[in-house]
Amino acid sequence: MEHPLDLARRASPKTDQKPANLLLPLHPTIPALRKAAQDCRACDLWQRGTQTVFGEGAQSAKVIFVGEQPGDKEDLEGKPFVGPAGALLDKALVEAGIDRAKVYVTNAVKHFKWEPRGKRRIHKKPNAGEIAACRPWLEAEIAVLKPKVVVCLGATAAQALLGRDFRVTQHRGEFVESPNSPYVMATVHPSSILRAPDDETRHEAMRRFVADLKKISRVLP
Image (cartoon, helix red, strand yellow):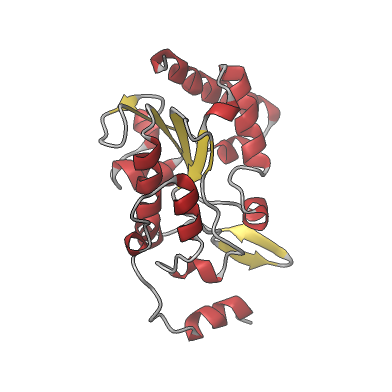
């Protein structure tokens, strides 16, 4: 049987879909962008998510971490990186000597894309059209904050900012050229560490992740 939300999505008219850049405030600030993004209908994901989950963090942040999309807990709380992956990121930042209170965290896609599995909502990877529809918000966040470093967590974030041909496996932990900021790096998403099959693999994955993050401190004042 088809899920009721799928039926609603198909039946819903798409005449209210507008490019996200038409919603961008004339004088953007992070609070103004966050407020405007609540009304985004640039793709269909707003019909599945509980709410828009915009970026959050220090307004003077020199480092932005960009993930894929909010998860189940983020969708319910309306805040990015507050679930298990966020907790692991917080731990890695401590080990890397980076003050979590001084960074900004966001996602390439601002709504939770999921599919039902029993009573659970299971993460579903956003497609290229959904990523492109949400890109104006991410670009606006970067333009307002003007960070020195942007860290892409996982392939979706990396390809959203560095192009669809970019491969994290080939350039992990490297600073690459990008118009987005002086330093852009791609590494794994912390959720991939949580999915490691055993403790030994998870420990090694965490060690490599922290090693990537430590490189950030070297380019900060």
